Length: 131
Image (tube, one colour):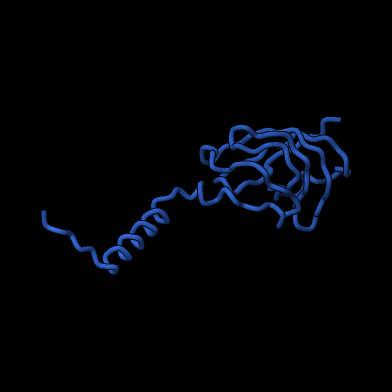
């Protein structure tokens, strides 16, 4: 039986090609699993690999924690949004229409309608006080 000699450079090339294949063939949703919401005032313990149909609007109950009217942003404690794989958490959201923030007070319980354009691109398009 003839012996098969494999050079170190051949093995190295196979390893590099395998790593590149994993990088380029991995869905972006899997790569985004470590997305951190700390940059907009929240925490993220959920798995975002389940992506919502693009675009989609989901409603969720939330408690208002911060209002940033000049930047049309809010921070809320919201319940789970199972369709996108999010559990309850505290996080910030951009608000599509700044007039929606008028009359709101910290601690208000709200119904938020959140439009998901992609797993990491979402905005509040409507909200309604519940109390």
